[in-house]
Length: 308
Image (tube, rainbow, N blue to C red; front, side, top):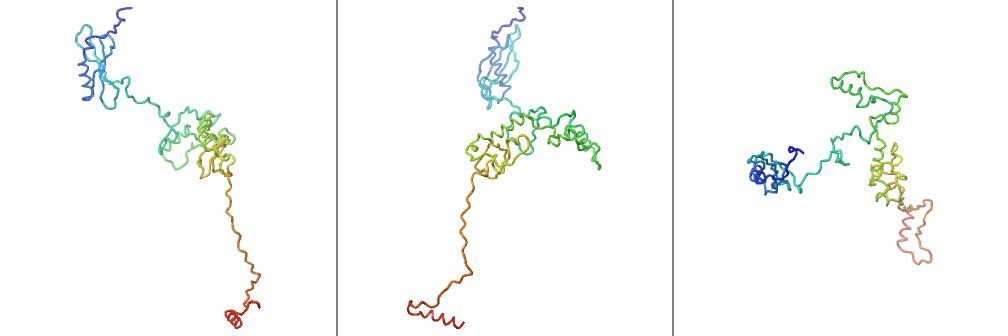
């Protein structure tokens, strides 16, 4: 091994003794009063030493001022290389940066927020098949791009000649439109599975509400069916008193608001009064023979009836 490639890791004595030089450099670079005690040194190579000083600045707990000094070969003067603020072993550090796409959680979006989807999003797949070019109505098609450019340049009174027309009957595009797939992208099998798992976790058979329910949603009159393949396992709850009102629920979900859970008994209705208008109720004006003397009031009533 040549002498040029052999380097000694022995700490240089003059560089190690240059603590005052290193402290002065750190104090010049830092704010007044934030450079603390000398916290050791480390040899970086031949005649190169880094001195560490405690940092007393608020918000930088465990950080250290690192001042690197060096000395030329056969020179007795130590010079300054650089001054930086570095985190120590117990330094308070910011958490590792995470891309926004991984930090986003359901419910984070607000009014005016835009959530772009990746072109290779695994949850989506092309909404058409058999065509090499995008559909005329697709926002990525050349026809739509030319139309937008023409509208931005000048607003014409007539109809542009390159407007997308209704697809010819029997074409692949017309079939896709009839099946509801005339969109740039639709849910892939992976997208369907993760959506089903998410909905079943929130409103599925394993939730405490479903475990205590008298019946499942598949037999509830408030369940509104949905189309597509997800309609075989999910629907929309339309019971305003249910905790899942307006939510996508599993057919195996249930709650106490089931339409057939209990029939409310009708309050008893009293019988209407019976009035027989064809029968006369007698009210005798004179007492019977065995009742004794006739009261004066009865005689007066009889006299009045005789005059009438």
